[in-house]
View (cartoon, rainbow, N blue to C red):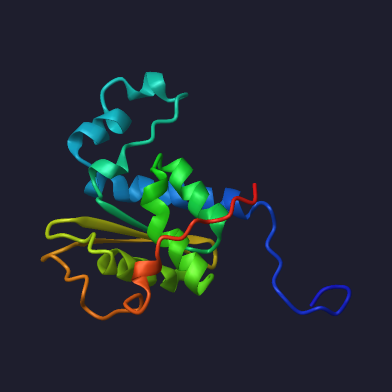
Length: 173
């Protein structure tokens, strides 16, 4: 409750900075487990100490085919895409989940995976990275490998209207 007796949640502008720090910690733990050696050498390779001033962001697209980014808001999706040097299309499932279902907290990554499946994008061998944020401030990852082609006709949360997506998102910037 605030000084005007209003009950609610207030998000400060520092939220994105806190999320970025949490993501950085998560990425530094996950990177060595999933990145090809060529990308790991960029970070941990010989002579890295001399390059410490430069921030090196590995190409996670070399490790993952699909990304499910916590749909907590447009700024979160944009920030993760920017910090991981992803393409706009890598955040499509996240943006469409935010558009259709709103901020469903960490569960949004399951709607996003369902979106990718309904679009027929998940193929045998594809690796998917689910990135979500939680209280405290935590960043969590789940890494999946598709064991089979996923039938886009299989009923899921998007089946009734997947043909209507993606939609053009308004630009409020």
